[in-house]
Image (cartoon, rainbow over all chains, first blue to last red; front, side, top):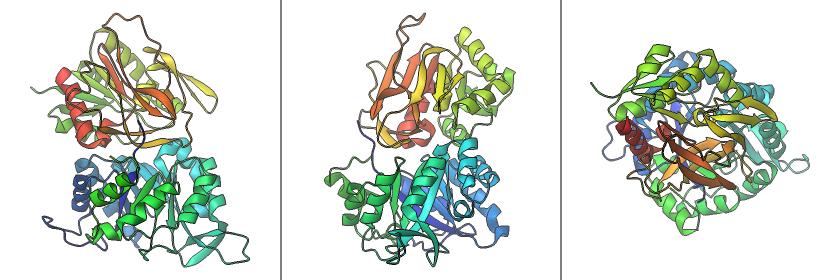
Amino acid sequence: MSLAVRVIPCLDVDAGRVVKGVNFRNMRDAGDPVELARRYDAEGADELTFLDITASSGDRATMYDVVRRTAEQVFIPLTVGGGVRAVDDVDRLLRAGADKVGVNTAAIARPELVGEISARFGSQVLVLSVDARRAEPGSGMRFEVTTHGGRRGAGIDAVEWAERAAGLGAGEILLNSMDADGTEDGYDLEMIEAVRAAVDVPVIASGGAGKTADFPPAVASGADAVLAASVFHFGRLTIGQVKDALRESGAPVR
Amino acid sequence: MGTRVAVLDYGSGNIRSAERALARTGAEVEVTADRRTALEADGLLVPGVGAYAACMAGLRAVRGDEIIGRRLAGGRPVLGICVGMQILFERGIEHGVETQGCGEWPGTVEKLRAPVVPHMGWNTVSAPEGSRLFAGIGPEERFYFVHSYAVRRWELTDTPYAPPRVTWSEHGEPFVAAVENGPLWATQFHPEKSGDAGATLLANWVASL
């Protein structure tokens, strides 16, 4: 008996529509996150992540509706991140049907938020999202936390931040390499190893997946789950192909 | 009339999924904190996520512990899920604080000793011969778990019903993944989040009502 490595597709959602989606066969509307979620569920995804990139706060209500409709049709865990600033945001997402909530920038600005959320809902609902990059030489850091989609350094050591957040009550770390993100050259394995060694909560590797061979090394480096976006959305890889590669490498999969 | 199932609403996390997953089995589902509805339904589902102490406080606020007790005294089925299973035991110990549970079963809910905690994701289980909850579900099927605490020792031996059927799983160490004991059944994992295997399990429960 052993826990399966989770394969998690991530969908960027803007005002209720999926960004970067393509039309799969037998899909009416590739821009509908609910329909795409169903597709991934049918393909064998172990969990789903929605990242709300809606710029206008006026369109936020749309996301709650998307979460609600997804939870009514898809019976695997759903994580929702993006724009979560306060305990009340978490409450609304959970009530809408999210199982976990991703917190990123707001926790950097105010780390107490991590403790507030986990005290109220339990640490299992809280995924700390860390966007990190290789730090400048001489900065005293190996990996630095970034904000604004990787454009701005936060001046915080990513490994220390992950460790601190786990101590404050984060139940899981979503580790996104901003250097690897979009390159499709593979995950940043050293970053995964460094964070894995520092925390005892699950680590989700994110950023850089381009082919099936990229996934087993992330797991070998200590990732409990692997997340990818574009390779799935553009139909280049299926969830099944990723699982086959993991299975062949000896990793347990569902 | 279909089978009527009540989902006990005591302010604990995402219960929409439980409601929808049960509705898929064909049951008539009502999410409620109303005592009478909860007592009279053919089956009562007790969900639960988050901290043990917070769940017990929420449960007591709607007299959920008493509703569970009354139902069981009359042989009426109850299904506990996740912390909704843990609160059926005598006590839970989280962060060194002991909280009194419903005490329907002897035993203590304690922190799992494993390299990575929470135990989060899909794991297999080992169901005993003759299990009705896992009927038609193969040993290779996986269920979705998310918890840091568990019951590591099953202590109930003397029971007015047939011997309890205990299903085990393992994360760092063995723990109780599900129990079938007379009218009281429970799972540590989330069947409502466990895809097709979870749907089969919930249908098995509803069919037993």
